Image (cartoon, rainbow, N blue to C red; front, top):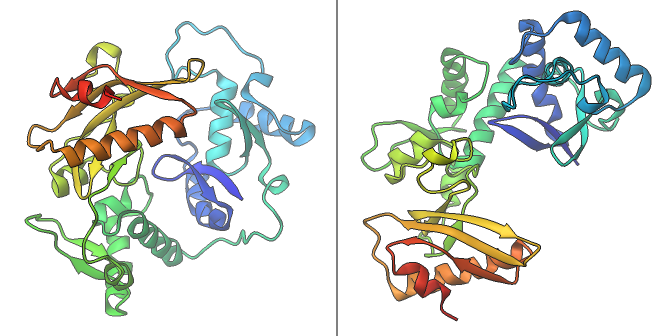
Length: 316
């Protein structure tokens, strides 16, 4: 079972981790806001309505006319719902498209779930282990990303765990950064990685830390989803292409499910990539699998860099 909350971004998290969201909820509640300044009377009224009447969408509250269509120009009630959600006074119990359905957490969280507040050190250790599980190894700034604790507090727990041999410091290649990992993670690494193709989401753990990707892999990546169309270089949903342990390029797909066609608007390889028959064969097989995954029957690559690549990939 999952619950929705903010992790490194808006996330679906295992319900067994619910108690580790509580320190964040309490901190935001004490601070008085997450993103928005919202009238306390409005928040109280929204909370009271849901308490008395049951789950509500933002659309269930009065909708004033907005002067612009800007994404973050939310109506007051929607802002109140977001702040109550971040404070833990409301939770999301389901979605209809992008519309969240809000209710009281005590009516949603199963009674068997541990909802006790973890100690501060316990919470910090949970964040450290979570970052290492997601990335294999990470730096202190990466562990602190989108978190509410200081580097000093974190370092104290890290030093204790290093003395207990539950953490180790690691250096990678020519990187100047000091990384942290766990002995069990490092001992479990395979001696070598197979050269397989992976098409990654722009929000995949492997690329969500942009500075880290550049430092470790020399790959400059930025999702262009939030860019105006005229400022996009690689495409709206440009997905990093990982080949073994090397980021070799980006692919911008769009599924036309009514036509059962996966359109690849653009594939761009890094200039240093050596294009071989083996690489092209693996990429084509991965695109075919991705096509099926998206409920499509065929794919069509429109553009590529180098320019000959899309012709090769489109061949039967």
